[in-house]
Amino acid sequence: LHDIHTPVLLERCVELLAPALGDEGATVVDATEGMGGHSVALLERFPHLHLVGLDRDTDALRIAGERLARFGDRVTLVHTVYDGIAAAVASTGRRRVDGILFDLGVSSLQLDETSRGFAYAHDAELDMRMDQTGGVTAADVLATYGEGDLRRIFERYGEERLAGRYARAIVDARRTAPIERSGRLVEILVAATPAAVQRERSGHPAKRVFQALRIEVNGELAALERALPAALDLLRVGGRIVVLSYQSLEDRLVKRAFAQASSST
Image (tube, rainbow, N blue to C red; front, top):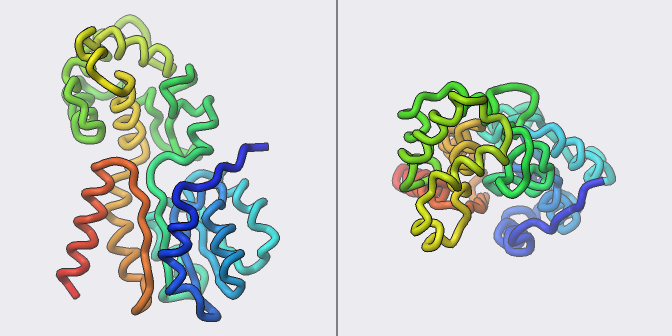
C-alpha cells in the first residue's frame, strides 16, 4: 500500500474550478491523475460530475483506479501523456469539457518509489521514466549523450550554471564505468562542485541536474507545449483551466500559452 498524500493546494484547485463544474453533465479532465487526490475531491464535491483522468504512469493509474472505483461510470481513466488530451476526451464521446487541471512535474508516487531513480537522496537505478512501458532511461542519456548535449540539457532544463563542468565530469567518469545508479551520479556531481559553490548554494549540487535529466527523459516541456493549446481548445465557453507549476521553465511556458490564447480571441 502507498501513502496517499494530500495534493498541493487541493482546496484552492477545487475553488478555482468550481464555477464551471456545478451544472449537471459537467466534465472535468485531470490531466495529471497521479494517485487521484484531486479527482476524489472533485467527484465528492460535484455529484453529477464526470471525470476523465490522464496519466502516463501505469502504477499511478492502477492506484487511482482503485481509489476512484466507488464512483463507477463517472470516471474514465486513460493511459496517455497529457498532450494526448484531445484524443482522450474524444474517446469518451465528448467534444468539449468544463474544467481541466494540470498538476505538473514529478508526482509524490514517483518520488516515493525510490527504485525509480527520481530522487538524488536515495541510491537507485537511474530510470526516471514516468511511463515505464518504454523509452530511454536517465542511465541511457548519461551513457550516450555527448558532452555538448549533456551541457545543453543541464543548462536548458536545469538552469544549471555549472552545466559545462558537470558534463565534462560525467563524460570523464563514464570512461571508467557506466553511470547506472543515482548514488554514483551524486558522487560525481558533488566532487565536481567547487567547495565555495557548495557553501553558497542553498540546494544540493545534484538537484538541477536530476531535474534536467527527468525533463529530458520524459519530454516534459515539449509535451506541455503541445498540451496547453489543445486543452484550451477543448474548454467550453465559461470553462476553467487550472495549472500548478513548480519551476520557472514550466511557469514561463504556461504564461506564454495563455497569453497567446488571449491574443487570438
